[in-house]
Image (cartoon, rainbow, N blue to C red; front, top):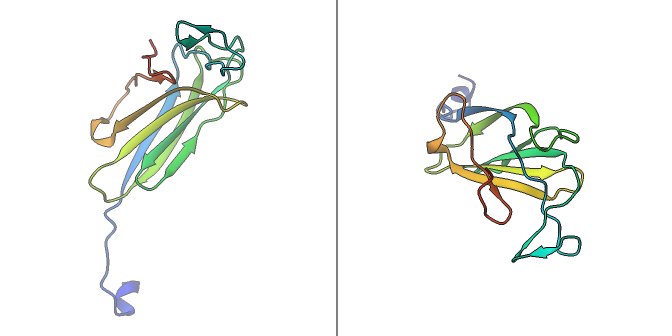
Amino acid sequence: KGSELQGLPAQRSHCKRLRLRICCGHRLPRPEAPSDEGIEAGGSFVQSPIVSSPLVVVGLEPGGQISQTRSVMHDGYHPIFNHEVDFAVPDAPFHILTFEVLDYPTSRPIARRAVSLDAVREGFRWLGLRSTLGNTVP
C-alpha cells in the first residue's frame, strides 16, 4: 500500500528465485599450462604439474549475477565445495547459467559450461564440463 499512497499503482514483483548448491567436482583436470610453461604435444599443451586448488564461479545472465565458492586447497581431483547460491531470476525471455572452474591463486581456467536455465531441473544433477580446449572432461 505504500506505493498506492504516493499515487503509483502497486506493482508485484515477478522475479523468481533460483537456489543452487554446488556440491563437488569429480575428476577435474589440472589447469592447462600457458604456452611459455607447457610442452606442445600434438597441437595441445601438457597440463601443468601443479596440484590445482579449484574454485567455481557461477553466474546468471542477463543481470550479471555472480557467486564464487571458496577454493579447495590441493584437492583438484575430487573437491568438495558445498556452496549454496541464491539468484534472483529477472523477467527475461532467455537465461544462461554459467559455471567456470578456476585454479586458485593463478586464476587459470580449468573447465567451464553454460546451460540454458530452461534445461535446469529440480534435484541432484551432474553437469558435464568442457576443458579450456573444448574437450569433454570425463
